[in-house]
Image 1 (cartoon, rainbow, N blue to C red):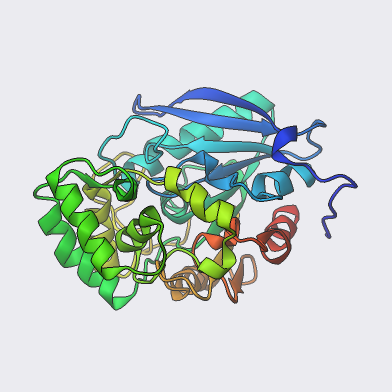
Image 2 (cartoon, rainbow, N blue to C red):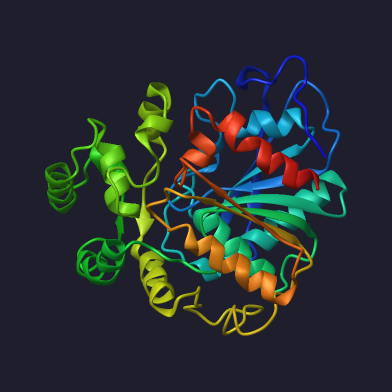
Length: 352
């Protein structure tokens, strides 16, 4: 099915935005951001989930056409989730287990109750993707029809230097700091964060945006790590200064264990979550669409290839994989040409 844009595309000025309080199943306060356009949606709800240390607004950068615009124009009822990793919420130590067991099931139930729909689709990114996939594979999201997952799902594979940073550097830094924040690039908090910023400035010379440079130090191995500068326009590159903040070391500790295992591993014993996510077939009927930027320097594209292979081994022909040349981690959504390069693929898969 081909998705065509309306005669006059939606812009941010057309958005009708409502922030809806949501309570996770363990009592943690979250929010959903419900966004609609000029006209009522003609399709069902789609839940869009951000990664670690960012927020729902990640999908509404200062581009002429954002991913949210594209969803609205395709008729979707758009719900953006601020889960416990969101910088719009009070910072807390968190794990992927908690998000999988408590946040995503609560969000899916709320959206279905609010819309009266029997099922929904989801577009999930990075650690929103890992935790959402964990919940789906565990059988906690039976109402989800399609999951489009970007960058990483069940198998985190990272560059060699990232393995060193997360395995060797993070444990040392975590003795002194509860979290790391790319926002320190503009506003350091204390002596230790200032020292870390100075170290990043000394080793990252790819641009004059210190938050951008801190993002690369925090999340990958690259100069920059989460995007190509050629893919970001000047307004978006400046906008990211306000879109990254605290990430707790509880997350990095879990990711370290998962990287060493070659797949996601639980770090807590929460009801409904399995001891292994790869020891048995996925307990979900949702169709999964795996997206991978060929230039991703945070999670290598083989991360998504391996997860696709895992799903295909259990249900061949059901799921899909797309690898985007010239794209990395976040420029799949934030790139200046994403509206013509990547959005149509996502819309096509959601409509399938």
